View (spheres, rainbow, N blue to C red):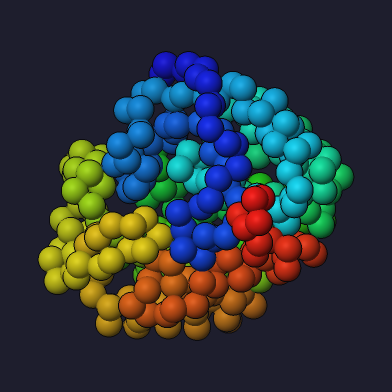
Length: 319
């Protein structure tokens, strides 16, 4: 693994490409990710540095402080982009991420992050000081270690993610679960989904966003490489033989998605299973524009922050 510091030349706070967060500031402290998830969409981006390489914006914390001190309007919250996992176990990434989060929280700006990594104690201590300004999503689709290891070889184990949830709840921060991406025939089965929700019982988790895997040529290539010696590969690809081309507004490109009827029925099933465990599972329009037009991710995340009204004009009137 090669880790290099690079210089961030543009603004630290940028507009998210996600439709549901188009008016929300986002920040991405690095390019590349050590987790090497087989389905990772970012591995197909032109800016992706290549497997085994992570580029870290070492000057970001200082640039962010300058931006915050000169802005006329501060955002209600900042979305820490999942283009790379901001809590991946690389000291340089963690150092930059911690300093970015510290600066934002000190200015009263909320943070929203999604991770499939381990949350270090240092971050939990920081979050505990700013509970009302922190919203965390834990990406988890299974508690089956064998399945998870094949899909996400270097990410945190299911048990480590459940521990994340437990420790967050102990600090007074109830995270949201991110069932993304669901893998047809593998992680969307009743036995797998109910086992996950059963494991979540007792933590107070009440919200889960869900989305299915979509395919691009690079994602399919990575899946074939990662799963070539497993019983999963042909099963997964079989579901997409009857798939459809979808204009994914979140990524401004076309992808191969599961048939809309399959997704509708499966989302309905998962919603019912989740409800049995006191969890509201929802679908956002940013990745399922043919099912719903509601940008529910942004709407739900915004409820966690008190200054949501001002957020809408973040990129207007000169910022």
